Length: 623
Image (cartoon, rainbow, N blue to C red; front, side, top):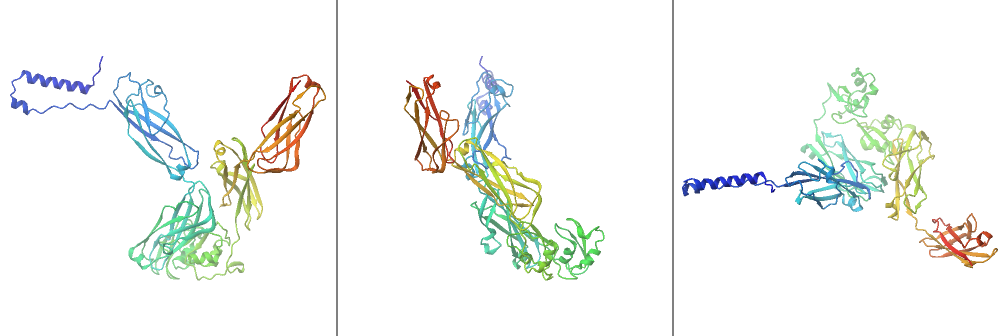
């Protein structure tokens, strides 16, 4: 029986009523012409389908051959087709795999209104995906010949080489022309490959006339996820005072990566500090101490200590504590409010107490003392602002305060350093060496190795101490994959961490073995007829690879001759590509041999750091 939709039946009924009225009544032509024309209510589409594409947004897509699982969610918004209509799902722009229709909803062979079917597809990340920075997805689906919406998304990937820049200012406000602002630039390696060694640069619209300036050493390296920092100073101008704010953009470059996105730091003008007299309050910032706060406000340090009797120990105030500053300006210029009294500086190679102090307007001797005379490359020191002119002598008679060095290096080797097949295990050996002049630890050193997974693993004991020039070793294993077999080589990329420091990246290239041996065996004579007859086997070893093999001792293993390998050629033989060496061995026919119709030699060649040859077989028959 044919089925009709409800809208169709309503429209038919209205038409019948209109015809009935026109035939049975005496309505005049004028009245009839005045009646409005009735229109049928349009029917909703019989099939409405909706498509959405989902993926794990937390997944970091940064490696060639990495799998990106995609889910294509098909929702049947409306379905008024007859129950017996067979399903028909066709995708455009994608080829996901869908489960059987009878596994979703009410488990029948029909997609009913409101039912959802989830189809899946695994996209394998290519180098082009990483280079492009995203994976474009454009797809639609047709169900029962009804087309869905078009889904267009771009799934971001992590390029092999990428940097980001953060820029901060100290202080974050200003109040007078000539005031010095210190900008700190943090360049972060946000890609998957190590950057450097190279010279990184920063270009800041407010520094150096917008010309690039160097950041870090000329041979700086940044491991994935690690940072490089540097600073530059800016002097507040009269124009800044008039405008009431300072806003400059900076961009970082280097390491073969595209320039970073611009990083901005905006400073606002504040009210000038209060003059001498009275008392003000100060909220302690990280790294500040009470005497230094007093110096910032031009106040008497002893009076400041006395004015804060609420502090159990004035030498151990914490960030966020509110302290009273009596008579600001009574002993010097009021500088602090709302600027910090102390800056933290990451020590770079070549820094001295004098160079650091001069950079921030501090006294070298005081800077040295408040940091316990410990100046280590990569470490952090506190720099007291507004103390230049105290002229405290440097300790130990040093004129510059050249630091001792706290540093270590990481090296890595592979055993073996080549591979020949999928599933081969490569052992990666790591050596962490204290290359500084101070003892490291006790600490737990760790190694982060790209081939061993994202998580760092322990290297050495948990409380190891490394004296200068001593080492600690550890290892990890890696199993080759089909992707490795598809390339000529792959590389390890590792960094070591410990003692609040991170080493420069270390790597080793592991190459697919291009060496190859082939073996050919011949027998003379090729038949035998009596006990005691001597058969001479000739073995020809050929270098079928692209590199010279040896000098080395090549050997043959042939169980027909002896159970142990025997030498073939000189002890220091070298075989050029496509060249050969030969050797002989003999077998004497035995009674056992006479009891069988044939005997077979199965031989294998070894040597020259090449994989073993294929098995070479030759059969001789009894006459």
